[in-house]
Length: 160
Image (cartoon, rainbow, N blue to C red):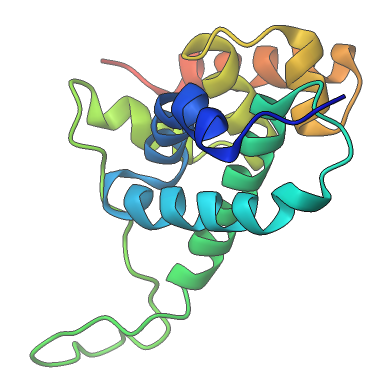
């Protein structure tokens, strides 16, 4: 299968990848996540062997970059005027997405990684379960279960 030009890939999937980065990493980290995703994709593109589901491939890269950013948050210094007593080791808080429902997106970011990805890709991007399963590197049944569990957790824990 022949790969499309990289620019065509970028043009076709730019919006979905950016929306995914905002939902998973938060508005403050989305630009970095988006940029890192496309840099990694550009580096890997010449050696890519399968082109049957490029959107899932890109979202997998975005997922990995968002997880890298999430892990690095705990290692970053937080500038303050004075360190409050007993604050040693406190992790910085994540900023909410300045959307219509920032509490909802904060709750989505609180889901386990596979559930978070499954809920976003299925509900926002309308991704079919077959494609979602490839993205999650799981079976379709497991992808369905991740969507179900994620939505159930959100319904139980989030009240508008």
